[in-house]
Length: 138
Image (cartoon, rainbow, N blue to C red; front, top):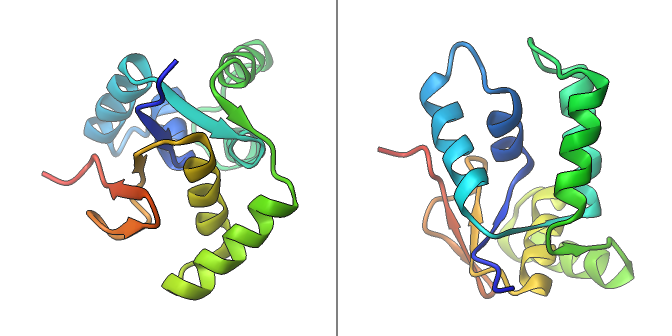
């Protein structure tokens, strides 16, 4: 299975629960989640769970949340190991970005994802072999 992209956690959250004040972003994220073959990491799952259970206005039921975790776990997946941590540190220092964003970029690179969808990083920036795209820009 060829990976088309890697999704930042915020894209997944928009896709799962949206935001009442951001219906356009929810629709775009839902389209990406439904149509892309994307990869995730253990960090993605942990962040997704944390945000969905603590920071959303419309949290999912436990059954819905478990179904999302099951779905995401079945995708191309990578663990966070020493090499991801070190690559994340390297990328965070090289590009002056937050470590957690850099660790996701390292995971995307490991999985061979050419595109990283995120609204938190510079649109059209290339970080190593990964190209960042903000899908919400018009």
